[in-house]
Image 1 (tube, rainbow, N blue to C red):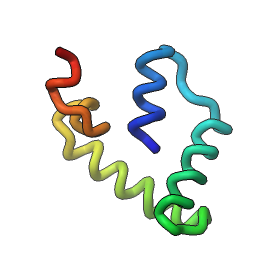
Image 2: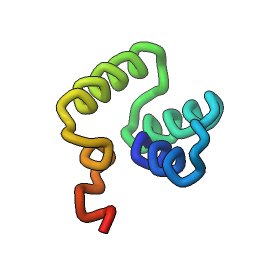
Image 3: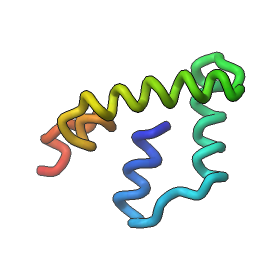
Length: 70
């Protein structure tokens, strides 16, 4: 979910709308077998925050690695 939104942001240079984020969040929850509730959103956002803080770069965070730029 976040990788597709991030890549879209880089390609279009426009931040996704709230509706786009919620749509992708809903799809991600559905794929994971979760019900999209506020509690689930908070848990996911805390996890994402930890992952962002641990990543060495945005590309590492979205799972593309350094080779993606070459």
